Length: 514
Image 1 (cartoon, helix red, strand yellow):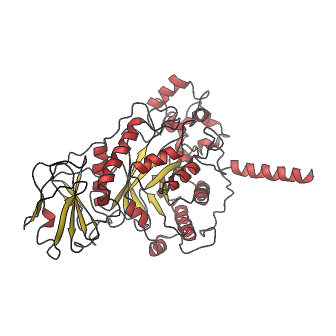
Image 2 (cartoon, rainbow, N blue to C red):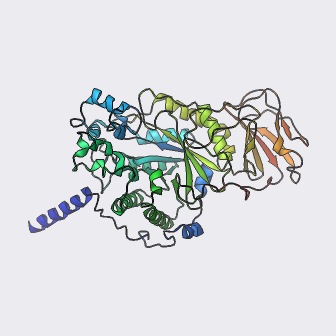
Image 3 (tube, rainbow, N blue to C red):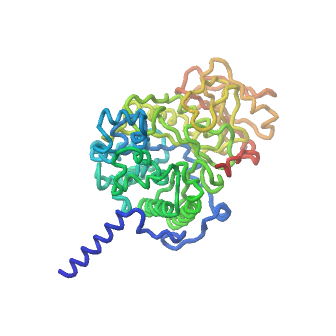
């Protein structure tokens, strides 16, 4: 009986520690891995000396992002509904009062029991992502709302204990890796500290301090070392539990208080990867050198070829990252064009989908993913495993650039071409069909004088391609029939590799932005 009582007390102490997020049970005092590996130290110069970007990431080019959580229940506005419903006189505030009642009676926490995920099938999702042509998958492990989509020991507000009562992240990891895809995750824990502060301005359940879901209720982006330590413990937990090969972060990790702790995270993560005998990658938006992690552009692109691998994160939906009623989706053509443009500039595309609260993915978003996959089945050779040439392409049409610019599709012509290479093969991907010949000016005789063309073909077509190389460029004929939709890849095989990849003049200007 005495032993039983002692075990009961130990269990209660552990439960208390798990529910007290300001006192994490994870040791954050070391940057070493679980096995004590300490190759990486928490400073940029040290990390840059030892870090190498994973070949799997540089080869993959295309991944799937998943924003899914209790915010899919109201399905209104965006994934920021949890914050905006507490912003007085906002659309979400007024919608919430009209639909669910006053905030003292029905707060965001009350959506969690409604978030059942009763139709969620991780295997079905993973199969869809493979068919879409994705090579890696990144579910959101925790969004700004503070609800963990995994079995957290530090946050009792989690999907294993509430709502779905399933370890969503764990199930996805198992299914994704079974399909041969790389598993990553994102964490937005850094934004939780201030996300609900609007609820302190009027009577609401946010003012109940026992509801740890609602974070610290700080002024926006206000941080202390205590918050930073809590953030680091939660991030270590994800590394230790799920061994992701990619971890994606939103913008707040460049906060000056969080930065030293983020450097400790990178060292811990990279050291653990050595123990796992695998290659891993971190994604951030700003503030960190592009030589130690991947620079990520939200809903936009770079207009230059970048020296180091980079990434666009964007969504199929134009209005929201999560499922909302009345979403307007991009076309497969726009997404394929963006993928090609990004890859030609040494980047990857991480494309988001937003499942419904019940765990289903809308027919329209499924159709878009499958259309992208159909294009990649024909043209994947010109995308996967390729490298940049000494210029990303040619043409008169200017594509969008910078963050939050990609909702509008660019109207390309058959003279807009993007380049990729693989060994001795050169791919000229034309971004629209043409009835007349296309002239690739960059492959004129002088530009590739040291190499000889052995063969020209269009991927997906058995038709012979007529070609002529002159001082003006390489003239190519289109086949009689389209082998696919959206964009068309000419494969030009040389007797040797044509020019250098990633020339020294490629831009690294974002290195210390933020």
